[in-house]
Amino acid sequence: MLNNIKKIGVLTSGGDSPGMNAAIRSVVRTCAYHN
Image 1 (tube, one colour):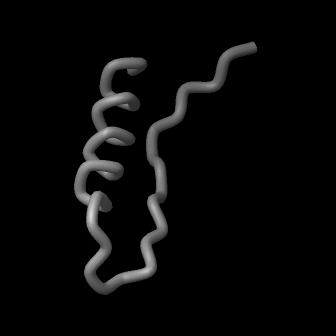
Image 2 (cartoon, one colour):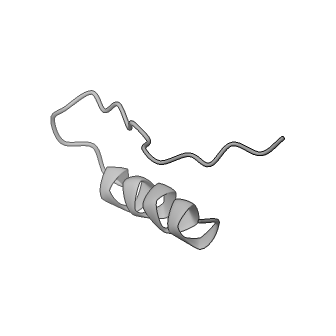
């Protein structure tokens, strides 16, 4: 049985953290690719 995921949540600590934009972009692109 396959469940289609419609929403995801990404928790971040806030503040400046190098690479966080790239990590979030990677998650979004991976989800879009596997849609």
